Image 1: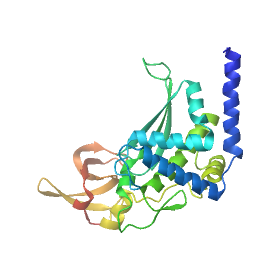
Image 2: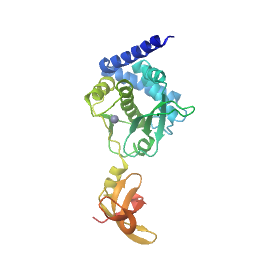
Image 3: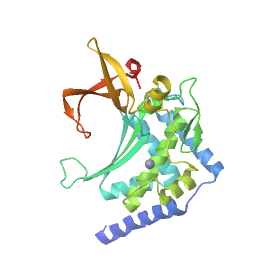
Image 4: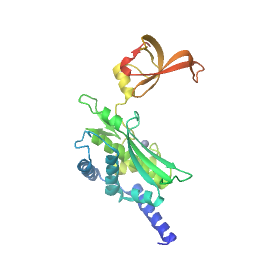
Amino acid sequence: MFIGEWMSQVSSQKKLLVELATRGNLTESQFLAYSSDIAQSLLAGSLHCSSEQLERLVASDLELLFQLYDDHCFQGLCRKLIADEGAELRFRCSNRMTRAGGKTTRRTYARRARGKAWREYEIAISSFLLNDNFSANSRPISVCGYVCEHRLHALQRIMEHEIVHLIEMLLWDNSSCAASRFRGIASRWFGHREFNHQLITPREKALVDHGVRPGSVVQFEYEGRAQTGIVNRISKRATVLVPDRRGERYSDGRRYLKFYVPLASLKRVQ
Ligand SMILES: [Zn+2]
């Protein structure tokens, strides 16, 4: 194929995806039918997950889920455009993302390392948040404006949101879920009414279960001595800063030692 012919094929595929993304839409009943077909196909094809509670989610499940959406909704054009760019798309289950449900990133390398693509896209999903939610007595969980009955529902909504990010990156370079273009695509294709998740995060748990939030003054025991400090950050554990001359200097000009403390070991003082 001549280069001109190849380029016009690339741009016609791009045009088609622009057309689909900006004009296409599903009715609510079409979307519900697609969505449950996709869910069933994922469970049928997954190596380790056999129920909606996703016993052990791995990156290949994310890849399969993405492919199902790309084929069902976008004629496989996301994968075609990525291949035409000479780029690669990876998937990752993150056990460290404690606030975001998903994240889509793009890295472009100035110099190409051996065996590596010059550009990589990655969709990461927080397996930590999925696993940490949907216990028996939890409050209702909504993601992208849908109340989710189980982890698979939440995963689908997060993946749909991330696919819109990926499509925007492929077609227009920049992507923002605060902007109207993103919101239009996500609502017409997937019926999203919100563009965030209400999964229970460690931050919420810390407040509900222990009354602790960033800025709280807390006490804990370290090597047999009581320490008093300020909660700086909350992820799986709390980061507590204890004033100490030997510590590192922080932006308020004072020195602190940093401790990572399990939430259950904190006692709130103020
Ligand atoms: Zn987003």
